Image (cartoon, rainbow over all chains, first blue to last red; front, side, top):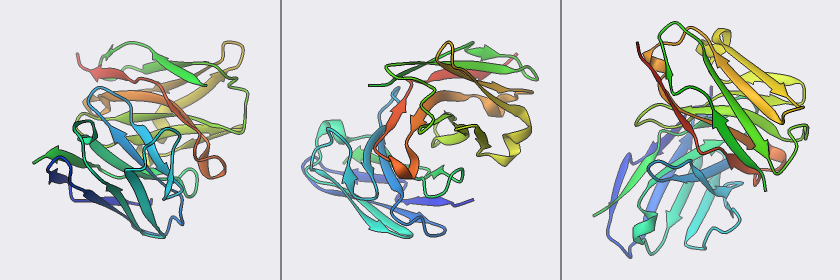
Length: 108
Length: 121
């Protein structure tokens, strides 16, 4: 099983600032990595796929980078609606898909 | 645009079988280029894949669940289902049905709203 490790577990950020979230895979997943945002009571929403491609309707404030085992999600100009839990998810080789344990972005 | 909706009991007794159905609208479940599957999310934890179907192959993502999970499809009703037998409190979670394009179509990503299943006597 490929283990996805996200850091930090919680990130405290002031509104308007930038948040940088990390995701590390225990072995290479190429660029087959997605990022999701989840708010309470909602299903996760796809933000980024292919490590760096924004999903339909996702604003440019969200950007992804990385390949292999190291990935980053950057959220610029944080607004109230961006405070949520973020998950990385690899889909490199079915059925070994796994999610990370999540990073909570909270208001500082 | 695909829409998925889970249905099934919200409370299951320990040792009994959890049964959920996902009804798909806006597209055909016979579209075998998609992965159709189930994800669960225990309270306060990250999501985890339970099982997915692709063409005629079923895959089970959690080895410890494999012997307890059954996946099935009813193309006439455009539905697919999950059965998880011998449940315990550890199976309490929000269960989502989802469809995904995988490496060939990673932008394809649809989830149901999720249904909370509590295992308790």
